[in-house]
Image: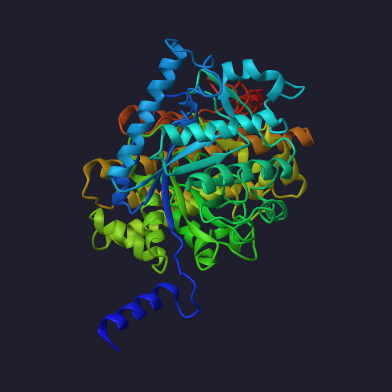
Length: 579
């Protein structure tokens, strides 16, 4: 056979295989996003720099400052009165478009794909005024049940890719609509009829974006109609959608929000569509990097509770999922999520979680420990310090589980919300009312409180280890010990707060209070707060502090007067009534 013909045959075999059909490898996505706090100044972080992301092995950036790409459109083809020439609203739109082009360009120059985070429905206020009768339902909400709404979204998507032809695709969120950063727009959740609404929206996006423009759609299943956590709902939706190489479903690794004790998401690995897995590295319910909290090992290999008090069959980790044909990548939230603080000035703990997840995703045949060792190499952790640092990180995962929830008790999924962002709730209102009632009735309240004190003992080990480990970066060296002390003092507050509330709750039920124990716990609680506040005064790199109030979804403070402090003060008063 002539050499040239042999080469042609060899190339054809490689391209088409023995069956004569093209064997095209599906792209694997390693994405990162900074989730800036809505309505606040943008987070200052290295993870906003595409070149920095490239160094971590990412191949795509999800851009999310809540100025959505589709909010930077004029809608001139629909109606030039929406953003009239010379209006301040049009000036805002044009400036937003300029920044979006810069963000896309920066990502591409670093070798990353650029995908814009997109809330639907978000439309110009003026547009809604002009077409209200055609697009809104009887409650005044923009509705996908109205044909004009679908027509407007087709026009919007066409203008979007005419305006930003370089944009590689969109990440779609429904269920939540953040309008904090788009003053001339309004919107609401499009999912009004459950599965039917999802089908309408996905089919629209598939046709108008994937088919027509050959751009990516990452459709987040989060929060609407149970699609994010109920396999039957997920399958009822996706089984009616024809797969497309540019359509990927994006699913949180937890069955619910990013909380410990929640199951590994049971919608992962099922159905016929490609999926990527979302992981939050700056955990909004677990300190936001104010203290050590190593979650990458649990995400990759399975969290401790999946083998103890929350046993789970099927997939329990990324390692379990990695050979599933649907698995197409990992999307980390390196920074952000939730509201307010704690605010940090050092990104060390987010760097660790993000590094391990992104580098593991580059080669899923590596073990988590192998990638962890690479992080230690790059951060100059040598000799016996390596074992100590590893121990510290694994202890942090166990300490957070016990301090926030439980490693041994049957922990209800609703109870995990008792602390979030920078807030600590109490037994005077909210989730802990039900939790304490149930634990008391089951005879497990003392065990729950003991577990909070067990967490403190783990934090004492962490604090001690943090002073024995040397890092090559001085700022990180300081933060290692300061953040570990932060974790210890915060969890002392939690343990004593729970002790007081448990003693008080028992007294409420029996009519008899152990006032001596209450007084002693109150003294320890006050001392922990004193030391916690002093830590912040003494160390500029210390994160901002928690507040003893329950989270309340009302800006700007996001809390009211109920919470741990109010609950403790109720029993403080009782403890001082006698000798």
